[in-house]
Image (cartoon, rainbow, N blue to C red; front, side, top):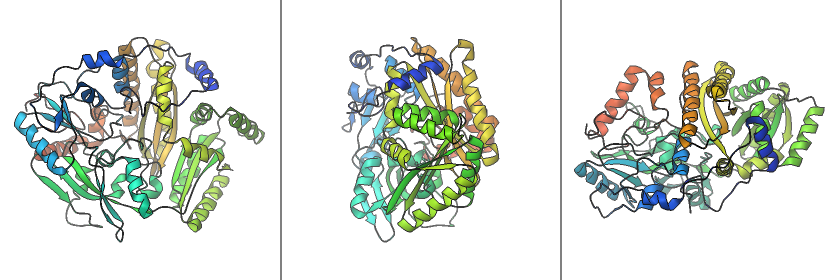
Length: 537
């Protein structure tokens, strides 16, 4: 059973080692455990539904609570404090595209607004109902989860859009196939969610981002059904797939998606290397990317993340051994960890490994084998559970990300980290912020930032401090011409900064598409694009 106020399954935990707790206390101060709201009074506070009765819709308070918030830090603060705000008025679990069409028709007739729901893993406010006088219906697509067609010759697989990552891969495995899309939220996030947020998996360098994997599908809109055929390529005008990719539920509800799959790899290995500093690591990673070395992943941590990650792992003996050995080799406090993966057939992966290590060594790096890589691979989908433990010990944790050209990477990362650290300096509180390059391209890289700070007894004050940090970091991103989101989407949290990236005319084009696809403003208002000032517009 999923937690109602945190990440993941209720029986899964990620203990915080004593050494890690001491490390955090030394850097930002000891955490204080404040009590969370209990489930029963929160359920008792769910207001009556404003929806008319409909056979596919439940107005059960528990179902409405479970669909009220996602996984952003503001969501966590709301759930843990019991101050949820707005609830959906009902939840539907359609089992077919026809039922989705019925629900859209119901919404038009009753002036209800609709929020499409995949796995509920959004970290930027995609699924949150907004205040207003129109009832809100959340459509949970989790029952549209089957492999509906497989063309093994063309390597095209068609799934219900509500299929989760593990279920999708499990249905491909008997055919020796994989999609290869592995975001950190893989355990719960869904195919449809990946598409409408332009998701990027951890091995996208090999498999491709979701826009490369999404070949076509079926989208239900308030006006009609949109079918996008999975052509290998087309010069027939603008690509309609691009309208759906990143649309965040504003243009329609994906019920079926066709994706490009490939055979399971013969060999896969994740390995580690250390650099004397981040600058030399960035240079090596850029050279690997620009030489088109066929690795599957490149993930370069800065010095602070390198230290923090190793300590939070709880492998104290391994960390101590690594520290002694690296210091003997004159890898000091500025050392940085690179994780790189090789995926594919035996010949290609051995060649990729050899080429990558040559570039690493040429930049003063030290390949250290696969021991650290195996630890990472084992825990890569388990790490999000650490958020629960940190919260319960008095710490809030959040992430943000961007992408910039190679020449802007160092300055942008420095500016974002400084913005986070300075945003709440006048409170006397410290922020632990660190970064890594999570995805690389020929022309640039994504910068993924994690930051921790101490909670306060007042949830509103904790939220206010987050708002100060998020705003300062977002302004730093915009000032350095970074995208406001490389892989998390826009939602509510990034919407104020979208115009800086798209421009006035671009925003007008997006709004015009929304008016055409959804003239009655039924779909996911306030996300991606501003909500109308009058809720009946």
